[in-house]
Length: 473
Image 1 (cartoon, rainbow, N blue to C red):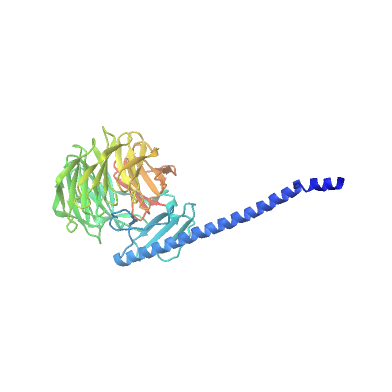
Image 2: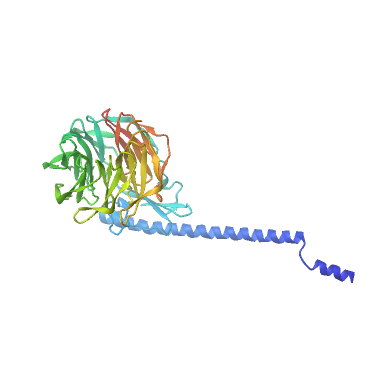
């Protein structure tokens, strides 16, 4: 009887040792299952990345076969911008695209990053392979060239770079002319043309160039005009049009041309308007629209057009301290203020820039030493301040530029004589200060510009009459 009770008690459950053995076995099986699952997931992610990149590369090569060059950007908006192509990665993945059209043969690099952070890259001559350093992760750090500056005219204020990267033009406010340079596309060094300047109007202030490189325009603050030039795409030399100027409103401060080359807009700081022009794509001549101007905020200082051509934004430097927002009729070029026509910026906004993907807008605030950061609805053009709406800049931030790959943003600081360097999260648009500001070699740094190939950065130094030249990592 005693033995039976003893046996019965032992059969009622497991011993501690037996339970530990079971737990260990379950743990081992679970670990094996997790490893197998992760392996299968990674294989599926890799297969998706390779498939996406392979299909995208085929589309890029088809575009290059038809057009002779690769597209300048990826654009999947309802009405894509000119010289772009729509490439859609799998859900949650991100494409980073960098074309290289200034060399022969032309090339490209396309990186796709998964939601888990895995990146694969493909080029025109390679298959999709693991990307050790995704394109979007470029450091953005600047290094002065061996010869760090080149002479400009008196009081250079702005820099215009041709899309092919072979020409650079500088508006000289004090000498009322434009300096013309050839650019070495390998080193980024500039060299003045044999005829180094061409006359502009009084107070030459800012320039823009058509996407096809055939036309250059300079706004003249003192004479309230636009100087119009044709460009020799082989030599880079400018020639004034037969009718060399067209009137603007009082005190024009900024000019921008649409990617399709059909529209030009000018911010008139002295009468709080923007002038609107249509452009003859054959001759480059401008014609004021039937309704030639539209109201802006107080002292409009900078104008920018989205790559898709659907939106125009103007930074107003005083009074309203806001950004005016417009939709653009892509057929007529006419602007219409959005239902909510402005969004608040910092104190004394000075310059505005839009990322190539159209998802982000940034504004320098001269008096509050900051940069305002906005996300852009690519369907409506509406701007929304980011959760953290600003990031600190140097002393007196003036002008701002964003690289074509969207990975880097630079802002010149007039009073501290340096450049703030930021990396940009291509998914959220958030900027991060990634380096000690690079000290500008000149005095009074104004406009900063980045070559389309992303290799070079240039700064116009108003008070030392020079252009600072940097290579970009």
